[in-house]
Image (cartoon, rainbow, N blue to C red):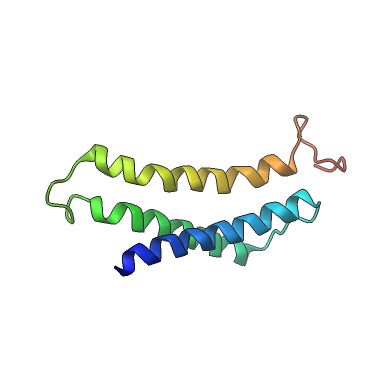
Length: 102
């Protein structure tokens, strides 16, 4: 029962941190705090573990690589978006941000 509550709670925390970072980036005030990045990575790793753990070979009696891949796909996409979107929002096509700085 608690697993059904922990997964969404971790996802909401990831979305809150990520949403705040993206909001500030769009306002021209990006946060470049190593501590915030570590917190974000921790919650992303927790989300990946929560989704994939029940489907690992030593946990699941009827292991299926396809089942594991299916359950890990959403966290991997979330990690890619969280890692890539801030870089996309702070850069333009010519490698400079809106203010002309590299």
